Image (cartoon, rainbow, N blue to C red; front, side, top):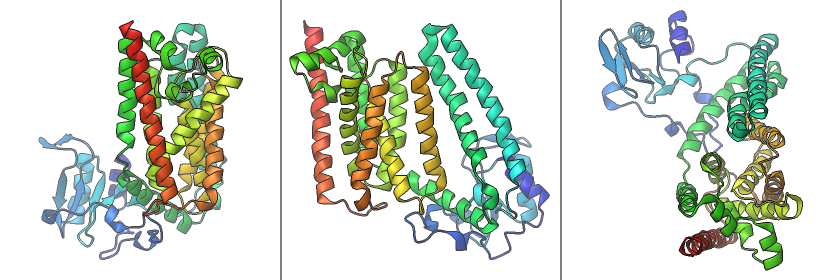
Amino acid sequence: MQGTGEFLAENEELQPWKPGEVWFRQLIPRERPWGREELLEPVPEDAGGLYGLKIGSSVKADGQSYREGEIVVADSRGELMQLMERLGTAVGVIFPWYDRIIPVSLLSPHREKVDLPEFRLQHRDRILRSFFITAALVGVSFYLPGTKMLTLLFAAFYGLFPLVESVMGWLQRVDRLTVEELNRRLVNFEFFRRWLATRRSKWLLPGVVVLVLVFVCQMAAGLDQSIEAAALVKERVREQGEWWRLVTTGLMHANIVHILFNGMALYSLGRVIVALVSPSLLGFVFLVTVVTGSLASLYLGPAKPSVGASGGILGCLGFLLVVTWRFRGVLPGFLRMSLLQSTVVMAIFGFLGADFIDNAAHGGGFLGGVLLGGLFYPRMRLAPESTRPVVRAASILSLAILAAGVGKVCWELWKTVSV
């Protein structure tokens, strides 16, 4: 956000913002679901016709306190610049001739093509920094095996993710993009990001909450006992025909870190599926890929019990990769790059943590998601306004099976504690 203040201070004329003009208006992708100016926050009535800015975080300046989200108005462009210099942070700017708050990401358009050597130099520094963080944390995980799972998670978040992102960024030939294309991508990204935040599913958050409540019940019954009671204990499936465990194992978790990581991942990927294709598909994709992951673990994985929603989560990831390929000419490129980044990180993470990660379940779930994506590929519609009856029926059936799975887990846990 400080960069915005520097921009205003160093560019007194604010060249893109000529009175009465909005530089990005012609670049809004109006043919796409997110191509609507209404996604930008309206200027409050008491700030209409004035300059102003929206505060990004609580700050105190010149003995006065400003709250996060507060609108501060100015009578002139010069006074607006002074405000920016004093406050140092903003998430939006107001110009008197536009009735929407302009996000800072759209304040300064690109004026020249990207200088590739400089671009790669910036990524190189981040690559080196992320590599050393990853190497150090991986080294700690093997030196202190008791902390391996937690240390590798830190390595993934603070090392692997930025490392893979930077390497993928370094490989991009952004120098081939024209200034107009750079600005078009900038505008498309900002409107897509805001549109994505508006897309909601009434089932997603409650579904994650149910997984958390199931884990709470597991802790009450004892985690080890709960895994034996209802997770994927392979000899119980093969020898006693308890095939229901293929589903129930995806509703359970091994520890707090496991449920936190999986809960966040499921919510993040789920909201993208809900936005891009259909809320009704989320439960179906999750259920099917939990089962494909469980089957892969049963026949290809280690003999020890397996537990967790990771097969279904990797299934959502694989499914979304197909979706973003299907609409590659429409969706912002960052989305597919982000999914590819997550795929690479999960593969490396699985290799490093093979002693506690069921890679067969991960691979089976991911492959199941890709195959489902291929099955739906010819009929996919981007952000459809209605859901096909067959998809709705599959969703209802999937949710019913998952609900029955939750009931089965609770019943088995009850039998465990009542013995």
